[in-house]
Length: 283
Ligand code: ATP
Ligand code: MG
View 1 (cartoon, protein in one colour):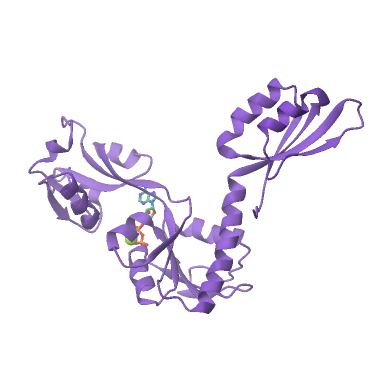
View 2 (view 1 turned 90 degrees about the horizontal axis):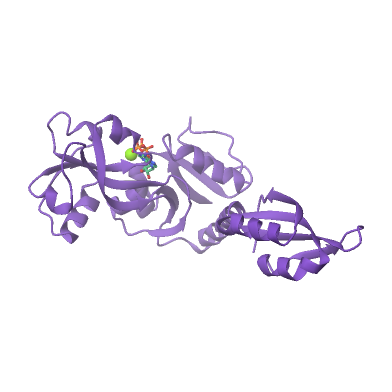
């Protein structure tokens, strides 16, 4: 049985559970217990504080874990980053009081920066040849400048609204982070196999989310043009319609190209374009 550590509560909890569910893994007990066993997949789930997950994965208490890349880098344990999961996106940034004139990192010279990410910050300051001082605290970082504890902060930012309400502005982005799947380096053969199976499912879910299935009607004299904009998985599926001179075309389109493709299809006289979400996609 493969043991996975996920956050007990907090920003990554819901999305971690949702991912397992989309992978077809049923958990009957939520985070009210410390651990639970999946009903239909050889997986045991441990609910933990996110800060502890890298250590537990390193020690082999858990085989794999879902954690923010920010936590993974801060803890710097010798464990693998197996998969970027695409949720829990945020930045680790330096912010200063709004009124402060700020042009470059040199403006932090001799100033005190409060953070819970002292390892990442230290590395960053060293790379930038900055002699700013790090003041490590364990929480409520954003209020530090307001109460005279520090001149600046280094903390996680997503929308920036917390910074704004605390009279701060973001001045340096140190890291762009998202939730990642991390794994112990010495998994047993059996657990490696289970992880492979889990990754196949995660991949299918993620690939599906990045793609849309589209069906449209096209006049036959435009089919070649339409096929050129629609690569599909191999090539688009084309079926003649009952209406003389028209065909139905089906294909898969990547989210990134979506609007560009739709515009071109319209140019080539496509009609009745249906866009359908894909649940799983195994390529
Ligand atoms: P725990 O109780 O497990 O220690 P926590 O309070 O340390 O939880 P959360 O605030 O729940 O942690 O954040 C968990 C992770 O969510 C972060 O490490 C980060 O990767 C991600 N995250 C995404 N957006 C944000 C944000 N705006 N602020 C903080 N974390 C964010
Ligand atoms: Mg934490």
